[in-house]
Image 1: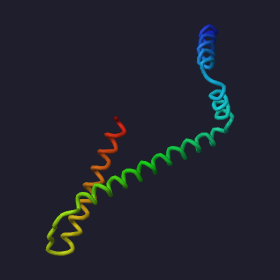
Image 2 (image 1 turned 180 degrees about the vertical axis):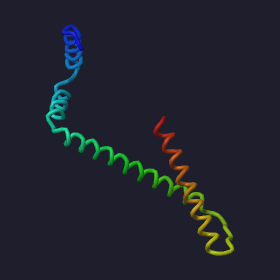
Image 3 (image 1 turned 90 degrees about the vertical axis):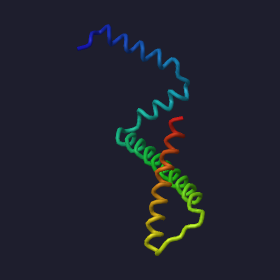
Length: 108
């Protein structure tokens, strides 16, 4: 159970934080709080999904660049199945390399 003194202290802390915000930031905060909870949740899910799709596309583009750079060169295969096996492995390796590069880029 909280005492009245601790409630006043937290209100003072909140007031200090709010004092440091610009009016545009306060307006944005008020708009977000005025939205219904399902709307806020849906907006966050949509933003997260958009980021996830963009990340997936970036990795796919980088994997394709790596694959194209590595596939050049003379290759001799006995039959088409050997080529397919090699091609599938090359694409998988390129995708793994793209993920590693993306993580390094993201982490700094």
